[in-house]
Image 1 (cartoon, rainbow, N blue to C red):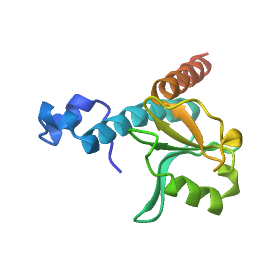
Image 2 (cartoon, rainbow, N blue to C red; image 1 turned 60 degrees about the vertical axis):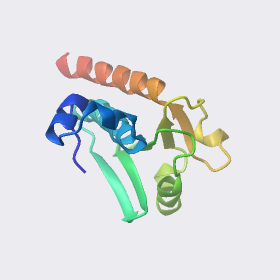
Image 3 (cartoon, rainbow, N blue to C red; image 1 turned 90 degrees about the horizontal axis):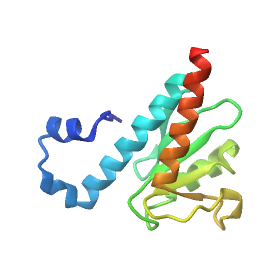
Length: 145
């Protein structure tokens, strides 16, 4: 997967107009890029590998923050109806993600994985970005200290 650090650069490089912002697929791609840039910053400051996971064409997870003790799987969507198939497949295959698989989308309620019927937590996009940003800032402070 390829991500751009800036949504405007993405749209310019892919020759997208402002009208594409109204398309759900484009909105999803921009949200995914936004989360990617935050997670990349965190990964750089913590030295943790960031990657995606795919088992088949229809089973993937956007981000794996592969912390050796507390790995996290994050699927980014535009709504609560976004597919959880990739997260479910990853949880079934790798027990490390049984309590750390999250669907991230605008407007979601905060539901921890242990409280969710399917074991997949929900986190609103704005809260996820704040948490990731705070962790990256903390890690940067430790790196500089």
